Image (cartoon, rainbow, N blue to C red; front, top):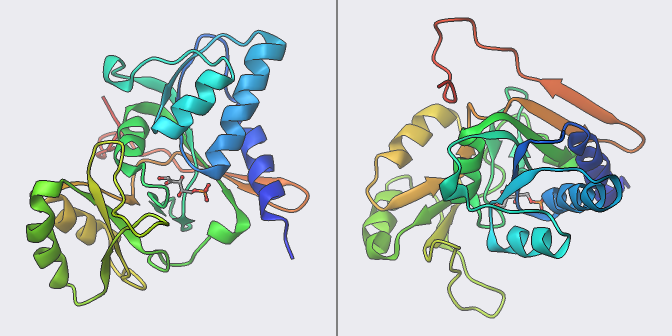
Length: 240
Ligand code: 5RP
């Protein structure tokens, strides 16, 4: 049995090697990203690393502050040098599903603002096709009924996310999440375009052209994959 926690940590430590003095860094959310935040905190304390960070969730913000990492609100930052975040699934084309922890809205802002987006994962997150993990879609409460109707057209289960105590889940934006069990998603780009067009959907968890590097933690090493650069003239979701 692979030790997935050790794999997550290994990937996170490798990613944090890319953080340098003076950088503005987006801190992801979830258990893998938390390893990276702890390692950044260690470098701030033990090595005097100087950086500015933006947190993609209130939970990450609390952790970062407890470790002495200087934070600025993302709204004050147009650009980040680097974002480090986890994922729920990722395929060989650097396409991911994110949002299992409910931070997809802020994670997308950070990933888009970052000159470099590094995704850190353990080996269980690699998939041939996206969709085994239910796709999170964040919805403004005012649009809940409308979005539920639109999602019903896909003919697959879309469950309103609940907390462990059975009450409805609220995101940091005071919105809700539907988790949609698509199974294999045949055309992620098409689906992303459709979901983006529904009024009231604040964010979906398909991260398709945002990821520049994937660091996979394995049992005794890490594997680093870099997305080939777009040729000049081809649209890049993140180009200025
Ligand atoms: C939170 C996320 C997380 O990055 C994703 O859920 C992975 O989490 P973990 O590292 O705990 O498996 O997208 O919204």
